[in-house]
Image (cartoon, rainbow, N blue to C red):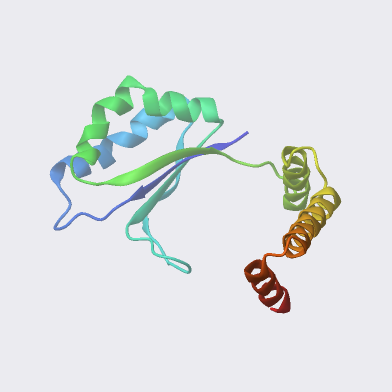
Length: 162
């Protein structure tokens, strides 16, 4: 499955440093042995939501293992400081999805997992437990009132009236 190395590079103040230009000249040769190719390289972004200062680089690889191997390779590690000394940023590796990917199936699987991790209870069980807890609170109030605590009776009545 295709994977992507995605970099969000933060802009540097001033002109581009010679070391950054050297990095740009040399990076492509480090990607070739791993099947990497630029899909987006340093493009300015059109921000449509949130804030995103900087540029984006997206490199496609045949798979996650190839992307990881490229990033850890001696050839790339040798040139990496040429960029990092001058440009801050974030780099991630993410797996892609296939042509048959269905977002609604993912949502259904996530919903099912959420239900399983909710203590083995269904939504109906949680709703019924909530009602029981509310009923228990009302019973506690009634017991306190029956014990003759006039201050508690007034507070309980005021709370119930809201």
